[in-house]
Amino acid sequence: MAVELGHHRRMGELICVALHPGTVDTELSRPFQAHVPASKLFSPERAATQLLEVIDGLRSEDSGNFFAWDGSPIPW
Figure (tube, rainbow, N blue to C red):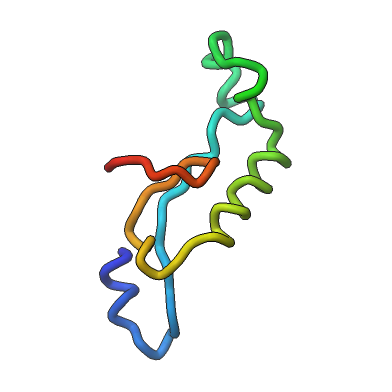
């Protein structure tokens, strides 16, 4: 998708990335929270804020990559 979007010049600069929010305190993650330290279990609001901070720091050369909630790259 990142490659295809990069070919559409009329759309301006586009960046396509995958983001991992970490473990978010929701019903979906409850079965997996037993071994997650409290400092790594995020409220939905905190997770959203963290992902927006990662997005704000992206550059065009980041397109096509995968990033964690703290901005660190995750290998595909």
